[in-house]
Image (cartoon, rainbow, N blue to C red; front, side, top):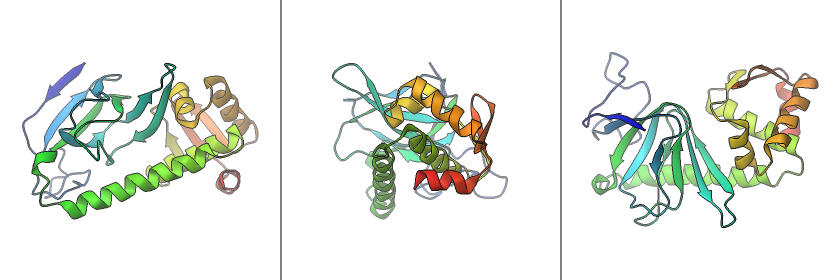
Length: 216
């Protein structure tokens, strides 16, 4: 459930003048901070799109339910990333917190003077969507998982230790694979010494070049 919401403010400052996670529209635009428990719905498909959201910490899955009841995840949003951009008044996807997640909420009604920032964010979202389509077009499950791990590593600062806040089922729904296929792909990468799996929710990249070659 929703744990709490604060009044518009700037939180989690580094003690100087700037928040730890950069604000997408500059410090002049105050924001409401909301915390969501794991599995809590942030918004539903068809709801009025009143805000744009930035992940302060935690992780979010954006998905749509297909006609046959299956779930297709279109994006995972991590710390600092923005989601909820829509081209009309309603949301076209569901958004849900994966872990305990803090979000900054920016009302769309106050965005008349930041069209350039919105345009930049929209282009980034389009680029990520295009990259996702390229991943889905890969022929093998191992190639898809390899590309997914490299994308996460890049978004988390290029560290060898990649955090996986999402479940194997989430990854499968994102890559168009079954949970069993995702697990086999992780095991194959581990058996080949390309990655290590210290925990269920993390992966350590051992051979960057091999992983990159598989994802190209």
